[in-house]
Length: 467
Figure 1: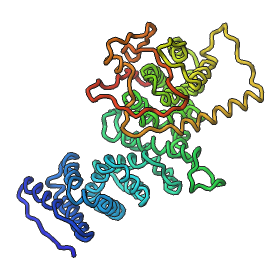
Figure 2: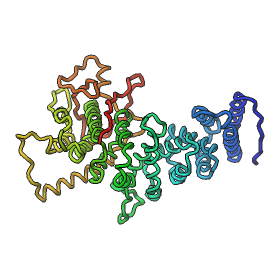
Figure 3: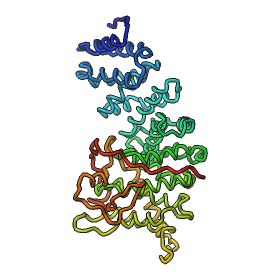
């Protein structure tokens, strides 16, 4: 039985004391748990405008419920009830508290995001995100929840099919409406949603799930479709995409960016989506990142190289003046250079991917033999390789939160390791140029994290925009 309780508070301290009493209630039946959760949501939402003025205050409420004895003893039931509240609640203040708790819990336990997906939360989040932006903090949190839920699992085809052109247009419109200040709180949540949707489309197209019919038409990638048609009017997204790759150290997010870049540079209508000066920055970032990858980051290295080929072949970079041609060739030479007995041999996939890049016409020396006119067999092999590259890029995944290890960071920790004599500079920072591949081709990226005390990722200076 539910009891209506009224509160009369005089100050913020009384609010937190009353909240502690609510979440400390001993619950031994589902009815009592339901009453406690209703009391928690009603109490916090009622005083949200008076005492909960920041994201920290909202998170503090969520943490109290997360640490409560009720949640500790009945995790699955509490999660399910909170998810049901997300599906049904209409009050913005109450939704804010619900979404905050699901984010906190889901980041600690991915089973929460999996339960959300199974209970139909994805369509609900699409609906709430498109509803309005009156409460910007709530809207931003909804975007983050959609991203976090979608990046750790495959979405059902019927759910992904609910993403229509209007939703994608709305996402791009938000980015264009914002200033070029990349620290704007809306920039990265919106970009990340578009990145994870692109990945879901790639997986759906190249790795059909058990529920997909063999004869069913693959879903149209709405992100690439929008940029193919309207890309010339939505350049801010591309600029911020490169900035994000420049500063991002989380492997899973780097892979999301590289997957979208791969499709942009392999889709004819988006070959020249980026400004030329932005492409220069992208080359600098990719060269630096490839040089800085440690020996065992094989899969991430392969993905960078798979993006490098269409970037150099199809974008404006194929036209003179050929940006940093000597540095790019030196990078490829370093990636395939013979190793001493101290290092493991370079894997076959790296050798093959680099060899393909070095055959790009503008990278060939004038004394090199021009590529022969392709025969039917060569064309078929090229088509097969292209198809395999798409599948390989789509398949690359990493657990969220894993940071990409840095060769230069590892070098700083070992004073006995000497820098290679042919080191290049990226973004004004000298980098060790000894990348090689240790282990079999396509080996998974090892799950390891850098120590918190290490310095942040280096940044490449961004040039001014040019057409």
